[in-house]
Every structure is written in C-alpha cells, then in structure tokens.
Image (tube, rainbow, N blue to C red; front, side, top):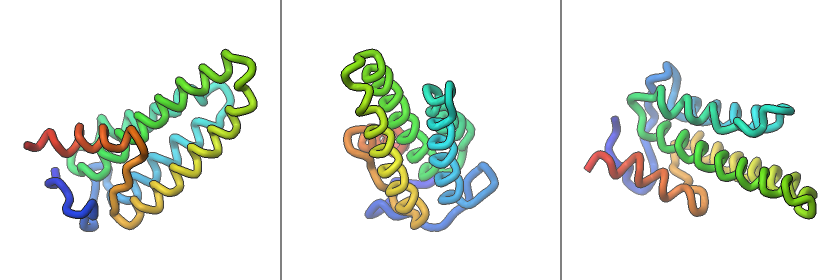
Length: 135
C-alpha cells in the first residue's frame, strides 16, 4: 500500500490486478458506466466498483477511485429510484445520467494522469476511508 499522496498526485505504479493503476481505475469506471446503461442491470452499476475495491490489495489509488465510484453509483441508483417512483421527476432521470457520465469522464481523465479527483460530497469520504486508515 502506498502512503498518503502529496498534492494528490501519485507516481506511476502497478495495481494488484496486474495492470497499471490508472488503467485499472479507467476500466472500473467504464465498467460502471456500461452496466448503468444496460436495461435491467442499471440498478447494479455499482457492482464493478465494489469488486475492484474488494479485490485490490496494493494500490490505494485504485482503492480510492473504486470506493468513490461505489459511493457515486449507489447514490445515483437511489436518486434514480426516487425519480422513477415520483412520476413528475422521470424526465430528470436522463439529465442525471448525463451529469453522472460527465463527472465520470472528468474523473477518468484525472486518473489517467495519476491525479486524485474527489467528486463533490462523496470524494472526501472515500479519501478518508482509504488514506486515513494508515494512521
């Protein structure tokens, strides 16, 4: 496990998944996005992030991004359910989906550069869980 990053930038390194850590993060987010748009599977779009979080043993960078994706997609799933159940908000489901994809693309670009990008509200919690456990 790496130590807490300085200035939210990591050195290039491998993950325990057998690939560069930034590639592991990007594949995690792409998997979540793809699953979220598959009919009848969208509500479990958080599963790829959970699997990566549980399987990754060496890279806190990968664990941070996997946990952040897990939080993001659990919150998104809850919001989607609320919107679908209240018929008035159904038109906003598509807007929420587009906003989430845009945020995920921004996060993937940062991850490719080995930078930490915290999503609003949930990013700080993921950061605390992954990096403050080493104290």
